[in-house]
Image 1: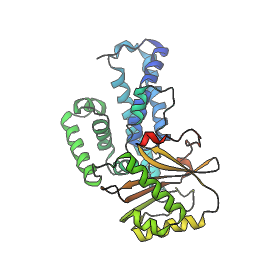
Image 2 (image 1 turned 180 degrees about the vertical axis):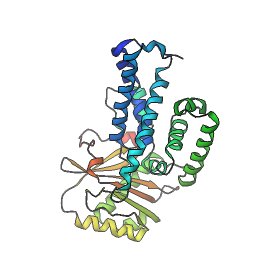
Image 3 (image 1 turned 30 degrees about the horizontal axis):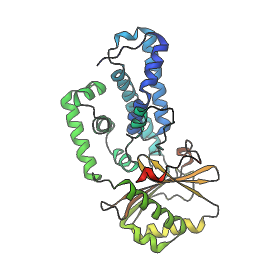
Image 4 (image 1 turned 90 degrees about the vertical axis):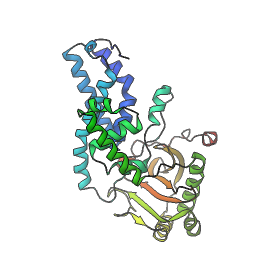
Length: 317
């Protein structure tokens, strides 16, 4: 169904605002960075506004598709800058955590779109795809765009899009099981792990950590302690967390929030965000297979210690 935007800048603004959450969700899943996503949306707005200045918007029969195409192509261009930054990044790089906390004024559609952000663990896997493969995977697998529409967005043939989709899907499914634990199981496992890790309980850690667990700590060279390489294996991981607990001199406030769709721990030191800890579970949901810890302060600037931000227990039943 075609849409009929009002002419002029006021109409252009209204159309852009109506689609902003969709654009944010698509671009964030392509880039894994809130800051870069905001920049891309600003570039998208400027392109859209420029189009409105040059000619009436009535000529655009599908503003949603038009805006998605602009945003996706700006995001693809942004990947080059992100890749250059990654080459000099200190230690492991993890996506910027995104809290699932839309404002009360957001519509039901906005809340649904915010929930479309894939898990942090999946974003790590998506980093290994080419930019085009990732764009196709996000549009097709996450947002349900058919290959014919994606072909128009990225200016490729439907056959080329099908090949990109096939390669991306095979790669992702080989590295990322389709199984996802029940939210209640995730919540319980997360709380058990955080209590053991921050309490330095090695016996409890040895029980909850999978034998081949991997711990990824992203401090970006700006936070300590943060290892320069991932830590592999249950023994090393347990010692790592025991060391964290021993060195921790100040009081840390733990808040359980949903981050990228998963129950996670957001840790504050006073009013300032200290770390985000996201756990990935084994298929049986009994043990932690991966731990992702973001301590780089530049990736935590959008987090706030809100007394009312914790979800009620009923949300996890």
